[in-house]
Amino acid sequence: MAETLGFIGLGNMGAPMAGRLIDAGYELVVHDARAEAVAAFEARGARRAGSPAEVGAAASVVLISLPTPAIVEAVVLGEGGLVEGTAVRTVVDLSTTGPRMAAKIGAALGERGMVWVDSPVSGGAGGAKAGTLAVMVAGPPETCDQVIPVLKVIGKIFRVGERAGMGQTMKLVNNLLSAASMAISAEAVVMGVKAGLDPDTVIDVVNAGSGRSSSTLDKFPRSILPRTFDYGFATGLMYKDVKLCLDEAEAMGLSLWTANAVRQVWFQALNELGADSDFTKLIQVAERAAAVEVRGKAAK
Ligand SMILES: NC(=O)c1ccc[n+]([C@@H]2O[C@H](COP(=O)([O-])OP(=O)(O)OC[C@H]3O[C@@H](n4cnc5c(N)ncnc54)[C@H](O)[C@@H]3O)[C@@H](O)[C@H]2O)c1
Image (cartoon, rainbow, N blue to C red; front, top):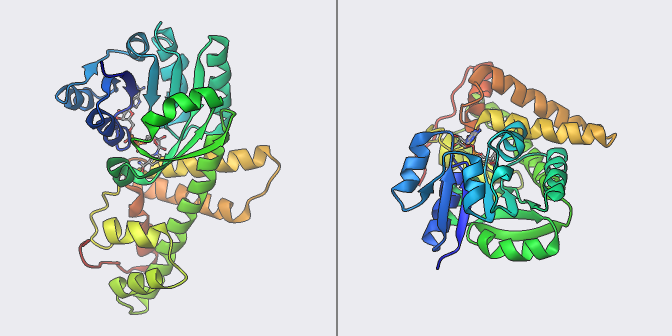
């Protein structure tokens, strides 16, 4: 019989990850606050659970992909939460939750004889669909050994530590760089276009030169130049990640000067674009300031 897994949070990342698990032969018990997201998975043979506790009653290993640390905490430890289920033993958090929340929930689960595997991911909705995410796994080695065959379905595994929170720290390091590269790429490309350069040429040259980054290699050609703005990552979540990173740095007594400037850029984007906007719309903030539009060819 196929192994049953729980999955909570079927959004931009959760849906393609859960979809790959179904395709790989796992049986899923799913839950999401959005009924339509659950219905789409029922149509693919998954079982619906009415609450996180119901998921915890049906599966010993449960994966979660939820927006914010507060939501993760409520879904796992709150009323009707995952830990109320009698079957659940291992919870794998694929969300960006921050190291302190990961440690807090990990400790709370430990008191109940359960294990928290801190396992954030990077690579976007496209990477989730293709199974090419970077998966940053931290937790007790024997539990990690048990869940890694499942996680291999969604991406490449990096074991980054044995303590809940170490995966999160790795993820915040990665996303600080991602947030910074989007911010500076938007400014730089807008400046070049304002001076008369062709946007496609700018990106082609940068990608053949030393200025390239995941923003210029992926986000510009896929979402910004064709102006589809459909990368699948929300501005509010990008801001959350930068803020979590700076909160951690401050707790460590570190002053991250560039990161503080990056936070301000994303705070401005949050106010101008709204939390739910696609994060590649950041270009529009720079465009407004420069009174110019970056419009290239459609993605190939
Ligand atoms: N989108 C990306 O490119 C990306 C990449 C890597 C990591 N992440 C991280 O992964 C996590 C999920 O991101 P996403 O982009 O898929 O977000 P999303 O908003 O698209 O999806 C979150 C899902 O959680 C559901 N949800 C929210 N509150 C809930 C609750 N209380 N109970 C049950 N379901 C609830 C929502 O309905 C939604 O389907 C976040 O922590 C994010 O930072 C996102």
